[in-house]
Image 1 (spheres, rainbow, N blue to C red):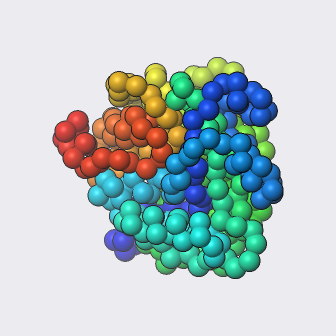
Image 2 (cartoon, helix red, strand yellow):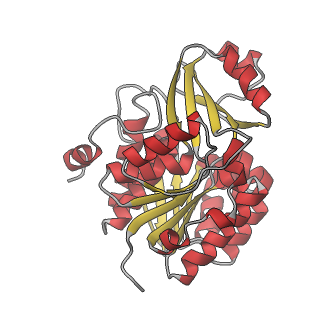
Image 3 (spheres, one colour):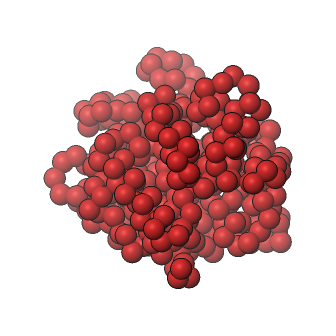
Length: 332
């Protein structure tokens, strides 16, 4: 097996985020479920909701893209595979991810629909409610995969959000096969309870077949995935099927179980939670970077917590400080 050229290669939705502040009344009036992600199925629907937004901040996003951007900020070698349209938002996304130090070579898609966008409403308590139009990202075909990049990555990282459309689902299955043949690890993030409600059977099948090496979930997601109501029961059931299980628990910190070893870490203290957008994405970035650097399970969890705390202290899902300096200060 050759030495990996990348620490992590991720496949995910290539999305431009639009963030705006909103109060709880607005969330209720527009029929949104606070703290969740819901899909918008047409440009007209996205335009109508966008028209109701207050002043916003535009920034490249997407769950897996946020993760690899942070890995690059931490000094890691990262690549990303995701599809944008040949339009202005597509140019914005491509520029941003490359400027972050991530290799991005996926060809643009001609014609409709437009590049994906996510309208994010942040309430005063820092909770984010997301409304996503998947646009061009949901048509990522297996033919667009950079198989050489995938085979050159120590870890292939997949996001559950992209499992919903049929075409990228097949692309992700093909990518798993490429990574497996190259002797690489596969990491998977469950992304949202919404994804599990639609594709939990597929996710459990991947685990049962031994195709997932590292699984990321939050507390609600692990309960939904294992179809139980008790947290410890869910964790035990999932940990028996994957070599590494990582579960985040918001202010209660996180746990990781690897080959029978269980460790935990507390949440990193911050003065104020401003915006929880990207918290899980950045936690995954920290944990995966820790593993790539040969750190212990406990140190990798702590690195994830440090990254998550940085991202929830400001608006947006991309780091706004020198991440390597931050980690050196807090973890050494």
